[in-house]
Every structure is written in structure tokens, then in C-alpha cells.
Length: 214
Image 1: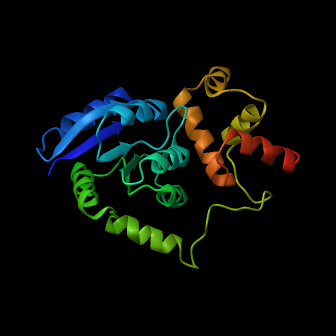
Image 2: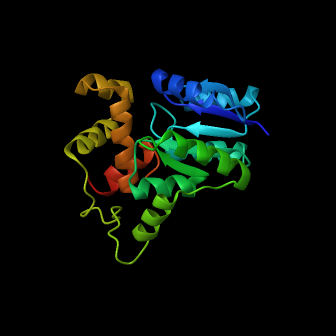
């Protein structure tokens, strides 16, 4: 059985490397690529896909919002998250949103291959290391980094800066130009602060700012 795979990552080099590596295996067929969430949704309308190999943070629609959007329309589609973020609260939010498996980009190539093959047959996959980390994170002895008390939420200086710029109505590209950083960096900080605050969108950020008189 051939696994039809769609790769979604905003870095051309990453996509090219994955296509080259996975193309060596006859049981995996890369049927398409996308550079962002909107492009992914367009490709899904026209392409028969078994599994997504999905980056977590990209400009525009991404993260748990994108996972939920895909899940609503394609409930049986397997979603393998491949991300640079290894924080447990990020992993758990992705899995809860509907991801089938979460793999960090610093993993060995064979780990990724094993995850693709196992999730294609079982529908889920969790590496022993990730399972151990999740078990510890969920234990009463762990320290949960997501704090819902506004006075205790810890944002970095850059996250706070981007928070206020978003609340002021600025878009990703405008913020990137103003701070002389990349769109990708802004998107990463935005995703982190949304995760820490337990929010989902720019609208939620504005409501939060009003509620907390920020």
C-alpha cells in the first residue's frame, strides 16, 4: 500500500529535502507541496491525500487553527506535525486539536520514516521519548508552563512587543517591517504568545487586552 503524502512547510529548502528523502521509499508517494495553510486547503480540494506532513508555524493560517480547519472537512485525514517546537504544552495542544502524531525537526530521518509508516496503519503514533515527556508533564510533580492567571503568565519582551502591535491592528508583514525581523519570526512569536495565553486568534488577543486593561 502506497502512502500519499502532502508536505506543507514555508521553507522551500525543507520541502525539497523531505521530497528527496521520502522519494527513496517506494511505499511513500509525495503527491504535492504547499507553502502555507491557504495553499494546503486549495491542494486538498484537488488532490487525493492520505497524510499531511505539516509544519506548525507558518505565516497566515497555521497551528491548531489550521489543524481544526482540516479536521472539520477531512476527519479521516492523518496529520503528522513536524515542528521545531518541542515544548510539551505546544505538543499537547496540537494532539488535542487533531494531529495524529507530533515529531520534532531535530529527530533522525529514520524516526520520521517510522512515524509515517506506523501512523498510516494505526492512525496514531507516539515515540517512547515523547510518551515519557507527556507522562511527566501531566503528572502532579510537573510544572505546567501555561498559567491562566494573567499576573503569572510570562511573556518574553519580544512577545509583549508583538502582542501590543497586534492589538494595535498591525498585520504580520507590517510588524516584521517595523521590527526588522522576518514574517516567520513574527508568526513564531505570535503562536507562542497565543499558546501561553490560551487564545486562538487576533480577535481573542484584542478581547484579552481590553479585559485585562492592557
